[in-house]
Image (cartoon, rainbow, N blue to C red; front, side, top):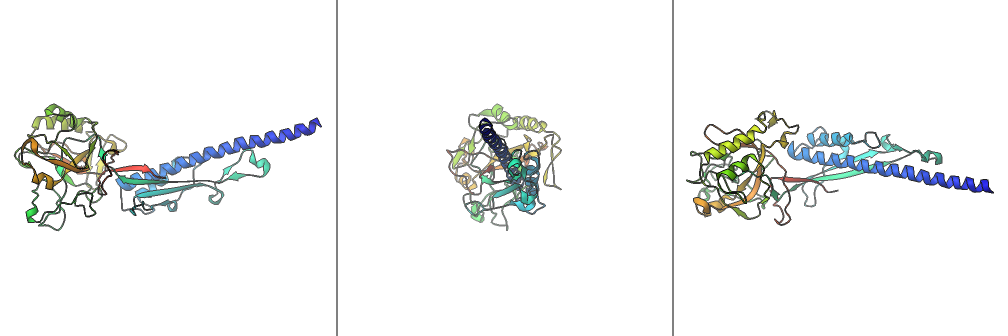
Length: 369
């Protein structure tokens, strides 16, 4: 009878061991598979926004980045099965194609199931593991590390077929110039896909100034004078800037010396980086990802209608920010102008700022499933 009880106890212990070892292994495999899918979806969304929004083909940057990231995260020391067909682009709840979905597999159907350790004693040779993740490119409503330059948002020129390409030209509604803000589907402002690489003057000189006293600088919260203005160019100001009907004060005057000191200090942080028109991208950066360069900066744009209706000079100039644009900052020109190339950037979220407008230029890249 003792032998019978021992045999029964042994079987119970073996069953419990099998459950503990194999189920624990399957839970680990499931977690690793989810990490693989999450990495793939996020990488796909990043490439979709920063590389090519329109290319969703199997050989495009979004799909290839998703595949590479998913495969680099192994499940139980083996590469997951994920093909271009497993990377899809579903619409978000508003019907916009802003999402990237990735499915990864370690299954018998893909000839790579996860083998059991103890289950084979009971005839269970392997198990199927599947994971899915979806990332979204969502509008941001706030930004940090903003430079103390501002330009009018892009408008539709009354005498031309398309929107104005150089904001230093005069905005004049009396001749048909039209500005529509980012909350409207017909927004006329800057777009990270259409306008990528466009060169814009961010800080004017005496020949390109907007008014007699306004050369495009503005005062960030808590900042006043030339010293703060210079530091805000070559250092990150942590103030959270929103563009939900918010007004900020201008910094009057040409500010020649502080502009040169701040811009030179910023450019020196990644001196070899420059814009290449052939790829419409940054090359020569010391950063593995050129978008991490401190020279990739954010500049607010203001409503030209509100500006035009307000005082034309002095500290009472009204700057109502409507959006935030990404720029690669170029070296100071001989004429004392600061120029930049439009480039996509990520933003952040401020729960007190209200919803982001549909036309928000910066985006938040996040997992939604």
